[in-house]
Length: 590
Image (cartoon, rainbow, N blue to C red):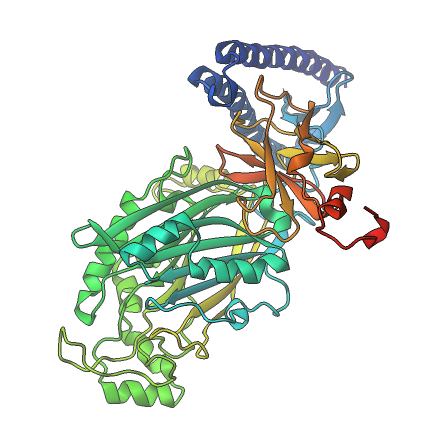
């Protein structure tokens, strides 16, 4: 025991010294960046300032890598526990630091690593590739793909969104193709949201959903909505697009995508509209491969679509049913035997030939082919298109697939390496995807396509559950006097003097749907856990009051990374004086 105590004492002193040096280096880096930035105001964020922030980010990444290595050693330590008589992962607390030190003692070797103060993981619930007891959460994702054929949206999309289904949905992802994109209409849609975006926002916002991202390329539109409670944990949102129409110069065909981090898990949604007609199956595969190769994101660990842990591929993929005659197709559909058509579906056939397609999963096609219908009709339109003169056969053109990033496969001829690789590939933050529903809704007739919906359960262990910024109102708010709000950076991130805090009415539709906003402090970047107070001018506060929420928007992450609890703004006496409310309303008099 004396030798073990000596090891603990040595590690304890060493940790204190390393903590002190690390904190001093980060502090000096921050101070240097502030001096370089100068009093330039909101537009004065310089490259040196950005690099100063990156210094602390790099330190954390190095620390995280050390943590992973020590956890592997900890697992090996468990295997030798009976031989050494020592318990791996014993925690001790330093007297002057909020960090814990985990000592790994196996065969006389001691190591250490840091975890944040609020981390409650111990030996009993650390993940080793399987879900620890009580360490997983389940979220429900509802997806829609629909070629709307330039039509205006229907008045009611309740059935399309499955709004009354239990358990409730956490995320909505909606991919549309052939949204009306005439030159005049497209320019007007760029200046304001299109009619389809409006109908989905108007439907989902009262139910507590916020549009967190959207991407439009001519007729292709991708929308992502999330329950308000999840907003601070959806980060690093980026969008991109790829044109494949008319030799890659026209955007009537191609793909739009949104990528983000959902509780630390990297997810990408890819909405595609590929080449049409029966004879272009190979071209569709080539187009999809081109999209995967050319789309890139400004994210170090996930620069490509397939780098993401979870990818959803959906849209009007335009694959047809080959070989079968029209009579056999119609009899199979009308007789409820659509499974007889699966073996001739072009996408299913291509998946057998193309290795990269085999990584994508799809549920069984137990619904009728979704193309082509007469508008406002349940009858298939089999009339011959002018381009080929042959009668058009029904097809499953509209699809939703998904892909979990495969683990690296070890070499078969090296058993030792294979064993090590298997252990290295244990996922500390696993993600399990299961499809609960895959169907179409035949009740919608505004287009010649029927919409396709899929519901998924995402079972995962969170990388984090603390918002980057805590924001809250201070005192009583009304338009009769200036108001105060406080914000605190809880974890270091790439903040900017262009960040702002918006005042949102409860039930807001998107980050831009604010009543007013204030810039964050512009003279210097915040310290972690520093409470910063900002004033809101009374003239910017709604006179009639109501229930509101504050949101901290990060320009670098392109998302709201901190939300306050709902709070009430009192009705102003000025509202009565200006005749906005009746005299004596709520006890107020002129």
